[in-house]
Length: 249
Ligand SMILES: [Zn+2]
Image 1 (cartoon, rainbow, N blue to C red):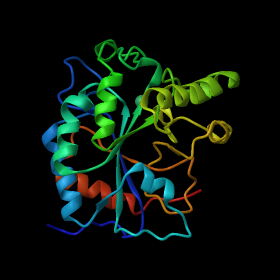
Image 2 (cartoon, rainbow, N blue to C red):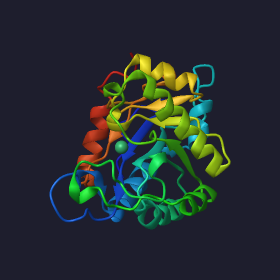
Image 3 (cartoon, protein in one colour):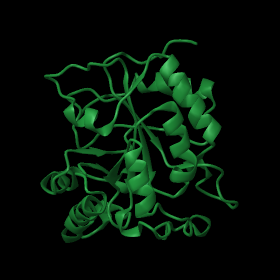
Image 4 (cartoon, rainbow, N blue to C red):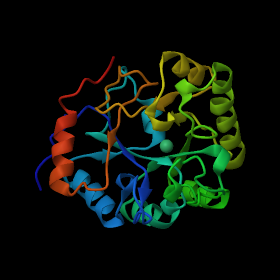
């Protein structure tokens, strides 16, 4: 096994969406990953010298506390579809890896009706029962807003509801603090980040590609988007590319 191309002290956050086979029809297949590939990537990272961390580790990470682990790596899953319970949870459990799932809080127990693509808008979203079971197995939940809007396109007065109400709803249902957020489509700007901070979040993930250092803006955290066709050689090349991107600013 070749060692990871990543430095030891940067945080790698990986962005996944769905685990399983995409529904037939065009579009968004890139947002699905086969279970065996997810497992292979987890095993590769571990063998290559990465340490999987959880959301609490991230919230405790600061410039004053250099990483106590080598190549901290966090798995994140956006949208919170039910395939995560069926297909991802068994792998996370077997591999003993933590993860954060960013769920669309206004659609819990419903369907992915926010999707404009007709082949993707009737997929089941996680139920509260599934989420509680996942939480017991080491999966943390963050907010992906109430309705999955492009926040910069919404009138400012709706930002608060999307951010604060989803947090409140998740905390009430999971009986745990919810302090992380992922902006839908990765779309945000400084004013939105400030509202998120006022709403009580302590970290928010973008889709800006790259690695994170302790001084990376906590409300613009970088992620590496893992797409459907990422066999290990390609996955490794993509990791190497992350090392050449800016880490803050
Ligand atoms: Zn999303």
